[in-house]
Image (cartoon, rainbow, N blue to C red; front, side, top):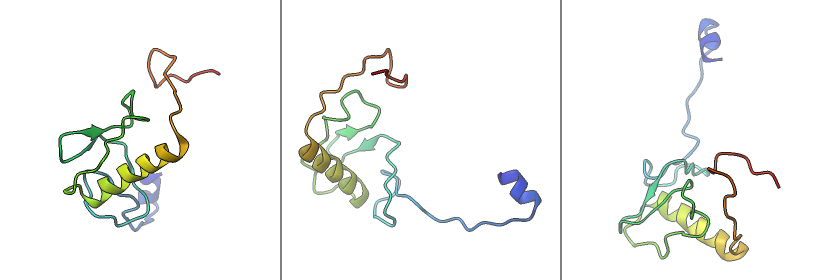
Length: 101
């Protein structure tokens, strides 16, 4: 698409559509994209690819944590508090292989 648009002279406006911890420090959009490891100022971290990501959410959050990281970790903590522990364990050799239920 990009090459075809360029050949046709189509131009696009580029907008920031997401906040990425730890790249962004303040919220500028409604979307937080958490595809990277999220470091916490006290040395802990959260990463969605960790086996324990669903239940090992760093809490409490240190005071010096930036707004984007603070919001992400707070929302994860709130979700786990409301939904509880799923007890999910990966039944495949790695978590990128689809599970059949």
